[in-house]
Image 1 (tube, rainbow, N blue to C red):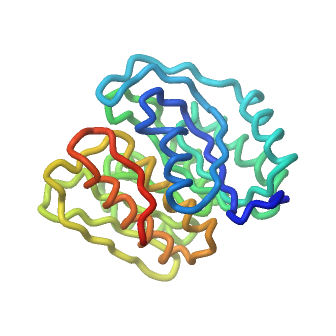
Image 2 (image 1 turned 60 degrees about the vertical axis):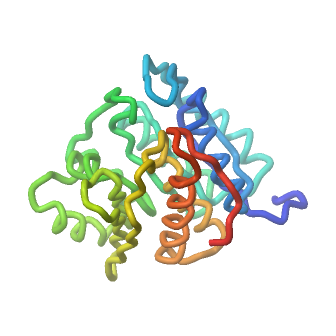
Length: 254
């Protein structure tokens, strides 16, 4: 049911950041700029700006799926990005609900362990992680998140191993080198996307933007490696859009 829309739909299930730099508002802006109509479901209310994170109020699981249910009655949704979620149990229940209601949903999970303003959320157990990964299409950790999820020792080998079951887009923005490299691990091969590190490129919510851009590009019908390359390019333009911590979203030729 597209109801006359000439754009595919993409759904973000994420936290509400009042500064609109991260979370649900950033995702919907990214969807729009990438040519996709964005739908949104709130998973948490946050008290934050671009440099401070005071607290989070979690939305009950049943309220999350009630929000989703209303949308699914009206819109044909297949591509879903999941951001800030209370814990592994809620994530697993949410994935189960989506798979019951949507035929072969394409789920991209951005594993937010710590807000860019410094607030820590939750940790994952190894068993919880393995059980969850098999139901996802792609996971988009940064380096600290990847080390927490997959172990700091032999990280590269671990990512290759787990990519047999789920695509992994490793965001490289936390490195200190002159170049910034992201890596996509798939069951067949790996792809690297490298850009110059920008002098004022730090942006609040940049990880959310990358994951949302990837979701949008998949919704447009691109293969994972093409979608990843285009999402990387979009995020690079977002990072260089201004010198503040809140980037601008512009429709660009990517």
